[in-house]
Length: 107
Image (cartoon, rainbow, N blue to C red):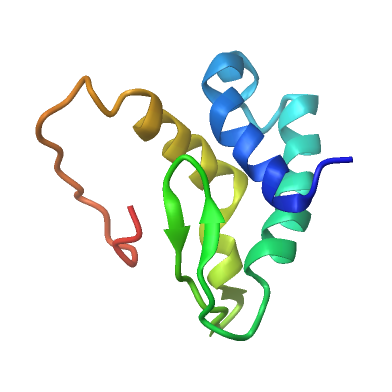
């Protein structure tokens, strides 16, 4: 049986291959979203700032923080993992990037 961190590793690797199912109206998207919430909570839901291994990216220190109606675990939701997978898969295609976001700058 896969451990929660294995689920996340597998998702990062396989998400680009199922891009046609990334729409929130797809059954696979809804199923994955629930699984991701559970896997992320299992890996990052601890109170301490201990490093969490998330291949292929390496160790991530991301302590749990309550942020009003959401918490820091929401920053690793399925939509964010889809973006991370895209970034990783295409990391050699771009030399420069610009982030025009107005969020926390996680990406």
